[in-house]
Figure 1 (spheres, rainbow, N blue to C red):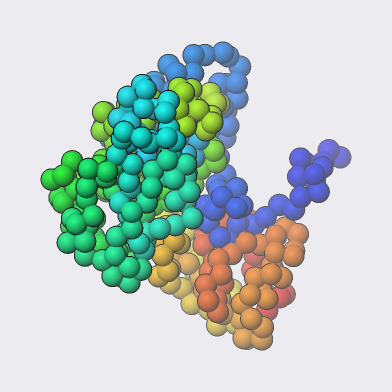
Figure 2: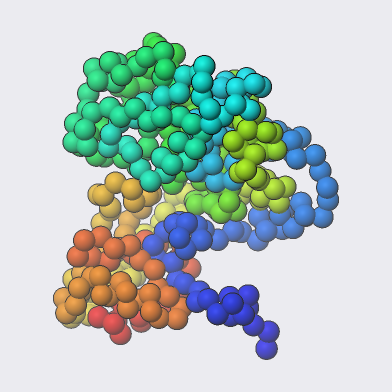
Length: 368
């Protein structure tokens, strides 16, 4: 009997009821995506030409003006920052992260500071915070703008926070002062309409992960926007020389994300969401039979849990803490990954397979 690669390495596999999280591998790729990657591996090709052609194809499929393909959403943040500072200038892009002689401040609401900021700061840009965690207003945004303002950074996951401001109120102020708006929307699909949501509002660059609901390679990402700034992104992106040169994207990944976007664009999400909701109903029905848990259905209200509009099953154990149950699920083989939300475990159907539901339910019932 041939051992799988994970068995050879003695690494447990997992049932993923958490979501398209990098920690557990993002999402699974369709056979068509793997086939495209395998086909790409069989030939040599000029990477710059492939990168440009693939960007055009993705933009066409998604109905946007232009696209730069990156090696993940975090790389997209770094490259977007470099693009806004250098605007593609050949000398300036080679100068980074030394920002002498160029605007080098990223305006950002304090409550939109995240762990992904480090990707932005790699470019040499400096974060200029606006407001507090619990309050900010448009007048503070306007007062923060100066000749040093390279762009305004908006983390879509922080939209619900008290200290946030509706992007529709911010964009007109920044447009008036010619400051680009960069939105990190890495995990903001579904719904499919979010691909265009922020661009339609007037954002200049919007970043998505390729390895989440787009179901492409985990090490892929997209920057979507207008032709001029996307050209500046390309100038700072591998295989060109700038900070993005260390964020290499290979021909196989480029081919994979193009095929993944083709499949995503054609997917019926009304049907898919109905399937996910049916999974949640089945899980809720089964676990509600246990006398040792309180089970409900609902949606996440905490920032940073995407996509927020996918129905979850929430399980509150009554004989042990949620933290203990969470840990015990991870000790199984295969491991069971869920979200941990206060005193409840959140079961997200987004990455579950139908045949995994009995495995998940059995694990919960035994451990409750």
